[in-house]
Image (tube, rainbow, N blue to C red; front, side, top):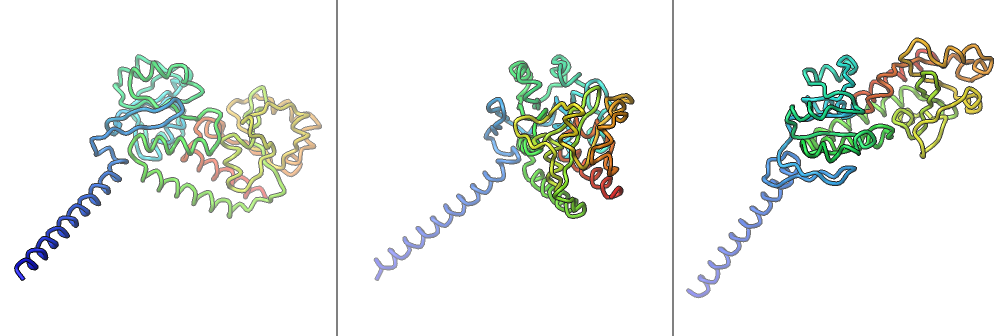
Length: 319
C-alpha cells in the first residue's frame, strides 16, 4: 500500500512538472511572437529588401527617407523621420503628410541626397529607392542600416508591399495591418459610390511638353482600377508611355485625368487640333486637371486615398 502511494505521488509530481514546462513554453512562445514585431527581445530583426537583408538591433528612432512614398508610409504610421530628401523644397509635401512629419531636416534631392547631411543626423535607419539609390547602397549602409525598396516607376501593389516592409522595419506591423484594412475599406466604399461603367476607359497622364500616359502597371493606373475604372493602356511591361496626339486618338479614352504643374504644356497646342476635339473624353466633357504633385510623386497610402477621393468627386460632379 505504501509503495502504491509512493508511485501515485511520483506521478502527480511528474504531471505538475510537465504542466509547468508546457506553460512556460507557451508563455515563451507568445513572448517570442510579440517580440518579433516590437524589438523588445534581445534577438536581431532581419529585414528582407530589394538589395538583400539588413539587420536591425533595436527599433529605429532616427529615420531618414530618400523618396516621398516612404515619407507617406511613415506618416501613415504616425512616425516622424529626422531627415527627408525633399528636393530642397520644404513646401512640396502635401498637407496631409506635412502635418504629420513637420520639423525634419532636408537631406537634399531624391536623385542626389547629401550623404554628409544624412550622416550628421546619426540615423539608425535609412529607407532608399531601388531605381534612384541602388548605386549608393553601400555608401548609405556605411552610415546606417539601409533598406532599399521599390517606389519610382513601381505599381500600386508594389508600393503597398514596400509600405509593409517599412512597417516591419520600424516595428509597427500590427499598426500597418490595421491601416491597410482602413485603406481597403475606403477603396471598397469609393468603388461602390462611383459605380463606374465597366465598358468605359480612363487614362491619366503627366503633361509638360510631352504627354506621358500612365499605363495599368503604374501606381495611379493600378489604383484607379482598384475603384473599378479600366485603364485605357493595358501594359505590364512599362508603367508609362509617351504618346502623340494621333496615338491618343487611337486609344480614345472615355475619361482623361491630366496632371499639370506648369501653365504652358503640350495640352494648349493639342486643344487647337481637330483631332483632340474628336476624343470621347473631350466630347463628353470628361477631361479633368488634377494636381501633378499629388498624382505623380507620393505613391502611398495617404496620397492614394486623396487621389481616389479627388477622382470620385470629379467624376460624380460631372456625370
